Length: 211
Image (cartoon, rainbow, N blue to C red):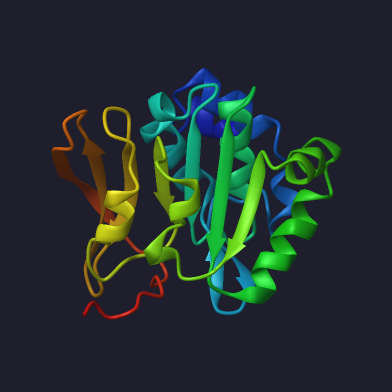
């Protein structure tokens, strides 16, 4: 699967290829794990197609350097947490936040299927938190990379606030009936830049109304 994605230039980065090669998608997707299409993981949500995970990892590659930190919002099965964790080693840290309690526990079980990921989970290099992903996880902020795996109806200001000035970048689908990937970066002085990239279709992100 990965070799085909690379051959068709859907994976362009050697670092992304190597990180994805170290993570067996079969541990995270119960049905057709090696097909390049979204697959159900239960509870009305899906694991994204492999090429979308590759797109996200490539978009965030410079913000997933060794020693950096990342937040995965709507971490679902835990697959992308493992990919990101390989990219930020040694000493980097990734945090997943998931709204569905059953998926929080299931993703931990999925990670424990591989001894390397189990050790990362045990020593805190991978953390999974239950909660509202649109609020992020301030305790671990600031983050060099934020990935959002579900479509937010509007741009979540809490997540922008948690980007690290100077190195922070977010990859996020935004929209309800029409959705698009946006890349959000933050300069060292705190200036925020938002760029619309391409149209997509994701499951909706649970997001509380703003006051």
